[in-house]
Image (cartoon, rainbow, N blue to C red):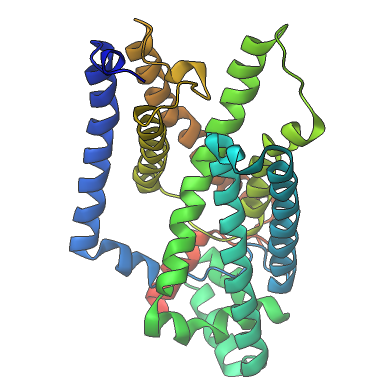
Length: 326
Protein backbone atom coordinates (compact mmCIF):
# COMPACT_ATOMS: atom_id res chain seq x y z
CA UNK A 1 0.00 0.00 0.00
CA UNK A 2 1.12 3.55 -0.69
CA UNK A 3 2.48 5.94 1.92
CA UNK A 4 -0.66 8.06 1.52
CA UNK A 5 -2.76 5.20 2.80
CA UNK A 6 -0.86 5.14 6.10
CA UNK A 7 -1.01 8.93 6.43
CA UNK A 8 -4.80 8.96 6.79
CA UNK A 9 -6.13 10.36 10.08
CA UNK A 10 -7.83 7.05 10.89
CA UNK A 11 -4.56 5.13 11.13
CA UNK A 12 -3.10 6.67 14.35
CA UNK A 13 -6.50 6.49 16.06
CA UNK A 14 -6.89 2.82 15.18
CA UNK A 15 -3.28 2.30 16.25
CA UNK A 16 -4.03 3.73 19.70
CA UNK A 17 -7.08 1.45 20.01
CA UNK A 18 -4.69 -1.45 19.48
CA UNK A 19 -1.68 -0.25 21.46
CA UNK A 20 -3.39 0.94 24.66
CA UNK A 21 -5.14 -2.37 25.55
CA UNK A 22 -1.97 -4.28 24.62
CA UNK A 23 0.18 -2.10 26.89
CA UNK A 24 -2.26 -2.43 29.80
CA UNK A 25 -2.49 -6.21 29.36
CA UNK A 26 1.28 -6.56 29.16
CA UNK A 27 1.80 -4.52 32.33
CA UNK A 28 -0.79 -6.56 34.24
CA UNK A 29 0.89 -9.81 33.21
CA UNK A 30 4.32 -8.52 34.20
CA UNK A 31 2.99 -7.37 37.56
CA UNK A 32 1.35 -10.73 38.23
CA UNK A 33 4.54 -12.62 37.34
CA UNK A 34 6.66 -10.25 39.45
CA UNK A 35 4.43 -10.80 42.48
CA UNK A 36 4.49 -14.57 42.00
CA UNK A 37 0.69 -14.79 42.07
CA UNK A 38 0.53 -17.11 39.08
CA UNK A 39 2.88 -19.69 40.56
CA UNK A 40 1.10 -19.66 43.92
CA UNK A 41 -2.21 -20.34 42.22
CA UNK A 42 -0.97 -22.90 39.70
CA UNK A 43 0.90 -24.92 42.32
CA UNK A 44 -2.48 -26.10 43.60
CA UNK A 45 -3.95 -27.26 40.30
CA UNK A 46 -4.39 -30.70 38.77
CA UNK A 47 -4.93 -30.40 35.05
CA UNK A 48 -5.72 -33.96 33.99
CA UNK A 49 -8.50 -34.90 36.41
CA UNK A 50 -12.18 -34.52 35.39
CA UNK A 51 -14.61 -32.51 37.49
CA UNK A 52 -16.80 -35.63 37.73
CA UNK A 53 -15.98 -37.93 40.64
CA UNK A 54 -16.78 -41.24 38.94
CA UNK A 55 -15.32 -40.35 35.56
CA UNK A 56 -11.99 -42.04 34.99
CA UNK A 57 -9.31 -39.54 33.80
CA UNK A 58 -8.67 -41.86 30.88
CA UNK A 59 -11.99 -40.74 29.39
CA UNK A 60 -10.80 -37.12 29.48
CA UNK A 61 -7.57 -38.26 27.85
CA UNK A 62 -9.53 -40.08 25.14
CA UNK A 63 -11.74 -37.07 24.51
CA UNK A 64 -8.83 -34.64 24.23
CA UNK A 65 -6.95 -36.96 21.87
CA UNK A 66 -10.06 -37.43 19.71
CA UNK A 67 -10.71 -33.68 19.56
CA UNK A 68 -7.10 -33.04 18.58
CA UNK A 69 -7.16 -35.64 15.79
CA UNK A 70 -10.48 -34.35 14.43
CA UNK A 71 -9.31 -30.74 14.43
CA UNK A 72 -5.97 -31.66 12.88
CA UNK A 73 -7.80 -33.44 10.06
CA UNK A 74 -10.13 -30.47 9.43
CA UNK A 75 -7.23 -28.00 9.46
CA UNK A 76 -5.34 -30.28 7.06
CA UNK A 77 -8.34 -30.25 4.72
CA UNK A 78 -8.50 -26.46 4.93
CA UNK A 79 -4.80 -26.17 4.08
CA UNK A 80 -5.27 -28.54 1.13
CA UNK A 81 -8.09 -26.29 -0.06
CA UNK A 82 -6.43 -22.89 0.50
CA UNK A 83 -2.76 -23.59 1.11
CA UNK A 84 -0.91 -21.56 3.73
CA UNK A 85 -3.15 -18.66 2.71
CA UNK A 86 -5.64 -20.22 5.15
CA UNK A 87 -3.64 -18.65 7.98
CA UNK A 88 -4.36 -15.22 6.55
CA UNK A 89 -7.55 -15.44 8.60
CA UNK A 90 -8.06 -15.09 12.35
CA UNK A 91 -10.33 -18.14 12.23
CA UNK A 92 -7.51 -20.49 11.28
CA UNK A 93 -5.25 -18.90 13.90
CA UNK A 94 -7.84 -19.61 16.55
CA UNK A 95 -8.65 -23.08 15.23
CA UNK A 96 -4.96 -23.99 15.31
CA UNK A 97 -4.66 -22.58 18.84
CA UNK A 98 -7.56 -24.71 20.10
CA UNK A 99 -5.89 -27.69 18.44
CA UNK A 100 -2.68 -26.85 20.34
CA UNK A 101 -4.69 -26.78 23.58
CA UNK A 102 -5.98 -30.29 22.93
CA UNK A 103 -2.49 -31.47 21.98
CA UNK A 104 -1.04 -30.18 25.26
CA UNK A 105 -4.07 -31.47 27.18
CA UNK A 106 -3.59 -34.92 25.66
CA UNK A 107 0.07 -34.99 26.71
CA UNK A 108 -0.70 -33.83 30.25
CA UNK A 109 -3.62 -36.26 30.62
CA UNK A 110 -1.44 -39.11 29.35
CA UNK A 111 1.31 -38.20 31.84
CA UNK A 112 -1.19 -38.02 34.69
CA UNK A 113 -2.79 -41.36 33.87
CA UNK A 114 0.64 -42.95 33.50
CA UNK A 115 1.82 -41.65 36.89
CA UNK A 116 -1.41 -42.80 38.49
CA UNK A 117 -1.02 -46.31 37.06
CA UNK A 118 2.60 -46.43 38.24
CA UNK A 119 1.73 -45.51 41.83
CA UNK A 120 -1.24 -47.85 42.12
CA UNK A 121 -4.31 -47.44 44.39
CA UNK A 122 -4.23 -44.97 47.25
CA UNK A 123 -3.97 -46.33 50.75
CA UNK A 124 -7.04 -46.62 52.95
CA UNK A 125 -5.37 -44.22 55.35
CA UNK A 126 -5.30 -41.62 52.61
CA UNK A 127 -8.97 -42.18 51.98
CA UNK A 128 -9.75 -41.84 55.69
CA UNK A 129 -7.95 -38.51 55.71
CA UNK A 130 -10.05 -37.26 52.83
CA UNK A 131 -13.23 -38.43 54.53
CA UNK A 132 -12.19 -36.77 57.78
CA UNK A 133 -11.60 -33.49 55.96
CA UNK A 134 -15.04 -33.87 54.46
CA UNK A 135 -16.61 -33.63 57.90
CA UNK A 136 -15.36 -30.04 58.04
CA UNK A 137 -17.84 -29.13 55.32
CA UNK A 138 -15.81 -29.24 52.12
CA UNK A 139 -18.06 -30.63 49.37
CA UNK A 140 -15.28 -31.40 46.95
CA UNK A 141 -13.39 -33.37 49.58
CA UNK A 142 -16.47 -35.50 50.06
CA UNK A 143 -16.72 -36.10 46.36
CA UNK A 144 -13.06 -36.97 46.06
CA UNK A 145 -12.63 -38.90 49.27
CA UNK A 146 -15.70 -41.09 48.90
CA UNK A 147 -14.77 -42.21 45.40
CA UNK A 148 -13.82 -45.88 45.29
CA UNK A 149 -12.66 -45.73 41.68
CA UNK A 150 -9.48 -44.70 39.97
CA UNK A 151 -10.62 -41.09 39.62
CA UNK A 152 -10.22 -40.57 43.38
CA UNK A 153 -6.93 -42.42 43.47
CA UNK A 154 -5.43 -40.25 40.75
CA UNK A 155 -6.16 -37.09 42.72
CA UNK A 156 -4.47 -38.43 45.83
CA UNK A 157 -1.56 -40.00 43.99
CA UNK A 158 -0.80 -36.82 42.09
CA UNK A 159 -0.97 -34.68 45.22
CA UNK A 160 2.72 -34.77 46.06
CA UNK A 161 3.77 -34.09 42.48
CA UNK A 162 1.75 -30.87 42.39
CA UNK A 163 3.19 -29.67 45.69
CA UNK A 164 6.68 -30.40 44.49
CA UNK A 165 6.66 -28.51 41.23
CA UNK A 166 3.26 -27.07 40.43
CA UNK A 167 1.92 -27.53 36.93
CA UNK A 168 5.26 -26.85 35.24
CA UNK A 169 5.90 -25.01 31.99
CA UNK A 170 3.63 -27.23 29.89
CA UNK A 171 0.81 -26.89 32.39
CA UNK A 172 1.20 -23.11 32.54
CA UNK A 173 1.13 -22.96 28.76
CA UNK A 174 -1.97 -25.15 28.71
CA UNK A 175 -3.84 -22.79 31.07
CA UNK A 176 -2.88 -19.73 29.02
CA UNK A 177 -3.85 -21.36 25.72
CA UNK A 178 -7.12 -22.57 27.28
CA UNK A 179 -8.14 -19.07 28.29
CA UNK A 180 -7.11 -17.50 24.97
CA UNK A 181 -8.85 -20.25 23.00
CA UNK A 182 -12.11 -19.81 24.87
CA UNK A 183 -12.37 -16.08 24.19
CA UNK A 184 -11.04 -16.33 20.64
CA UNK A 185 -13.44 -19.17 19.75
CA UNK A 186 -16.43 -17.18 20.98
CA UNK A 187 -15.21 -14.13 19.06
CA UNK A 188 -14.52 -16.09 15.87
CA UNK A 189 -17.81 -17.95 15.77
CA UNK A 190 -20.05 -15.09 16.87
CA UNK A 191 -18.49 -12.61 14.43
CA UNK A 192 -18.67 -15.13 11.58
CA UNK A 193 -22.26 -16.27 12.10
CA UNK A 194 -23.71 -12.96 13.33
CA UNK A 195 -21.78 -10.38 11.25
CA UNK A 196 -19.87 -11.84 8.30
CA UNK A 197 -22.43 -14.37 7.03
CA UNK A 198 -25.26 -11.79 6.97
CA UNK A 199 -22.92 -9.23 5.33
CA UNK A 200 -21.90 -11.70 2.62
CA UNK A 201 -25.43 -12.93 1.93
CA UNK A 202 -26.25 -12.54 -1.76
CA UNK A 203 -22.56 -12.12 -2.70
CA UNK A 204 -20.25 -14.71 -4.22
CA UNK A 205 -19.84 -16.70 -1.03
CA UNK A 206 -20.44 -20.41 -0.58
CA UNK A 207 -20.90 -21.72 2.94
CA UNK A 208 -19.45 -25.22 2.68
CA UNK A 209 -19.55 -27.95 5.31
CA UNK A 210 -15.82 -27.54 5.95
CA UNK A 211 -16.14 -23.79 6.51
CA UNK A 212 -19.11 -24.41 8.81
CA UNK A 213 -17.12 -26.93 10.85
CA UNK A 214 -14.08 -24.65 11.07
CA UNK A 215 -16.30 -21.85 12.43
CA UNK A 216 -18.15 -23.93 15.01
CA UNK A 217 -16.33 -27.08 16.15
CA UNK A 218 -13.57 -25.06 17.83
CA UNK A 219 -16.09 -23.68 20.34
CA UNK A 220 -18.10 -26.93 20.56
CA UNK A 221 -15.05 -29.06 21.40
CA UNK A 222 -13.81 -26.50 23.92
CA UNK A 223 -17.18 -26.21 25.67
CA UNK A 224 -17.43 -30.00 26.02
CA UNK A 225 -13.90 -30.08 27.46
CA UNK A 226 -14.89 -27.36 29.94
CA UNK A 227 -17.85 -29.47 31.06
CA UNK A 228 -15.47 -32.34 31.74
CA UNK A 229 -12.31 -30.70 33.13
CA UNK A 230 -11.67 -29.10 36.51
CA UNK A 231 -9.62 -26.18 35.18
CA UNK A 232 -10.24 -22.71 36.62
CA UNK A 233 -11.30 -19.94 34.27
CA UNK A 234 -10.52 -16.42 35.46
CA UNK A 235 -10.94 -12.87 34.23
CA UNK A 236 -7.17 -12.44 34.27
CA UNK A 237 -6.97 -14.68 31.21
CA UNK A 238 -8.59 -11.83 29.31
CA UNK A 239 -5.18 -10.13 29.20
CA UNK A 240 -3.74 -13.02 27.14
CA UNK A 241 -6.81 -12.94 24.89
CA UNK A 242 -6.16 -9.24 24.18
CA UNK A 243 -2.53 -9.91 23.26
CA UNK A 244 -3.59 -12.74 20.96
CA UNK A 245 -5.93 -10.50 18.95
CA UNK A 246 -3.42 -7.64 18.93
CA UNK A 247 -0.79 -10.03 17.54
CA UNK A 248 -3.10 -10.98 14.67
CA UNK A 249 -3.93 -7.34 13.82
CA UNK A 250 -0.24 -6.43 13.98
CA UNK A 251 0.42 -9.32 11.60
CA UNK A 252 -2.16 -7.91 9.18
CA UNK A 253 -0.77 -4.37 9.40
CA UNK A 254 2.75 -5.64 8.67
CA UNK A 255 1.55 -7.59 5.64
CA UNK A 256 -0.28 -4.53 4.28
CA UNK A 257 2.73 -2.32 4.95
CA UNK A 258 4.70 -4.79 2.81
CA UNK A 259 2.32 -4.47 -0.12
CA UNK A 260 -0.81 -6.56 0.53
CA UNK A 261 -3.95 -4.68 -0.46
CA UNK A 262 -6.79 -7.02 0.51
CA UNK A 263 -8.09 -7.17 4.08
CA UNK A 264 -9.48 -10.54 5.17
CA UNK A 265 -12.23 -8.80 7.14
CA UNK A 266 -13.96 -5.60 5.94
CA UNK A 267 -13.92 -4.06 9.43
CA UNK A 268 -10.09 -4.00 9.38
CA UNK A 269 -10.01 -1.66 6.38
CA UNK A 270 -8.36 1.63 7.38
CA UNK A 271 -9.35 3.86 4.45
CA UNK A 272 -12.98 4.28 5.51
CA UNK A 273 -13.87 7.11 7.96
CA UNK A 274 -15.74 4.50 9.99
CA UNK A 275 -12.53 2.57 10.68
CA UNK A 276 -12.01 3.90 14.26
CA UNK A 277 -15.57 2.92 15.16
CA UNK A 278 -15.09 -0.55 13.69
CA UNK A 279 -11.81 -1.03 15.58
CA UNK A 280 -13.33 0.26 18.80
CA UNK A 281 -16.35 -1.96 18.34
CA UNK A 282 -14.18 -5.02 17.76
CA UNK A 283 -12.11 -4.14 20.82
CA UNK A 284 -15.22 -3.79 22.98
CA UNK A 285 -16.78 -7.03 21.69
CA UNK A 286 -13.86 -8.94 23.20
CA UNK A 287 -15.35 -8.31 26.65
CA UNK A 288 -18.76 -10.01 26.14
CA UNK A 289 -17.12 -12.84 24.15
CA UNK A 290 -14.85 -13.65 27.10
CA UNK A 291 -17.67 -12.99 29.58
CA UNK A 292 -19.82 -15.61 27.85
CA UNK A 293 -17.24 -18.26 28.70
CA UNK A 294 -16.83 -16.96 32.23
CA UNK A 295 -20.59 -17.31 32.73
CA UNK A 296 -20.53 -20.79 31.19
CA UNK A 297 -17.93 -22.04 33.67
CA UNK A 298 -19.71 -20.35 36.59
CA UNK A 299 -23.02 -21.86 35.49
CA UNK A 300 -21.36 -25.27 35.30
CA UNK A 301 -20.07 -24.97 38.86
CA UNK A 302 -23.31 -23.56 40.21
CA UNK A 303 -25.85 -25.80 38.46
CA UNK A 304 -23.98 -29.11 38.49
CA UNK A 305 -22.94 -28.77 42.14
CA UNK A 306 -26.63 -28.45 43.05
CA UNK A 307 -27.95 -31.14 40.72
CA UNK A 308 -25.15 -33.62 41.36
CA UNK A 309 -23.65 -32.71 44.78
CA UNK A 310 -22.00 -36.12 45.26
CA UNK A 311 -20.74 -36.55 41.71
CA UNK A 312 -19.55 -33.10 40.68
CA UNK A 313 -16.35 -31.46 41.97
CA UNK A 314 -15.95 -27.69 41.76
CA UNK A 315 -12.37 -26.90 40.80
CA UNK A 316 -11.95 -23.99 43.25
CA UNK A 317 -13.26 -26.21 46.09
CA UNK A 318 -10.58 -28.80 45.28
CA UNK A 319 -7.95 -26.05 45.42
CA UNK A 320 -9.31 -24.91 48.77
CA UNK A 321 -9.18 -28.45 50.14
CA UNK A 322 -5.70 -29.01 48.73
CA UNK A 323 -4.42 -25.89 50.47
CA UNK A 324 -6.05 -26.98 53.73
CA UNK A 325 -4.55 -30.45 53.52
CA UNK A 326 -1.11 -29.05 52.72
